[in-house]
Length: 134
View 1: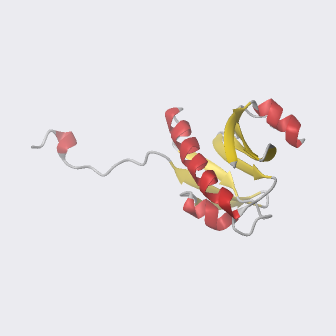
View 2: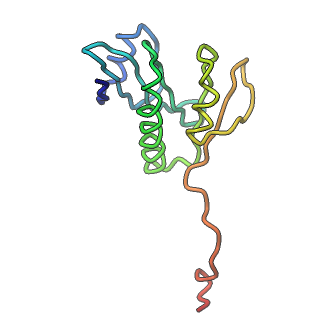
């Protein structure tokens, strides 16, 4: 059964043999005592980025990923972010659908990668109550 745990970003980088050189918050997914994925938030290039890496993809991981996206969006908003960005992973053919389901929209192609953005805390429409109207 998949369980998700907070993890030290440095430990995640070492475990996956990747580089995480921006300030970050990281989580890991464990299934049957095996590391099956990581995800988190990272800050760099004047943006807040969300990332997920799945080492052992399964269709049933889509829902936990979407729930973690919701959690990460809430955390980013609490930290004062107005937007969160993601890069689509071309390795997974379902990535575009998952990104759209998570509330992201295509922004641009930068350095050969598709960048998506999600606005956090959109300004609610005015009800007239904010002007003192009754």
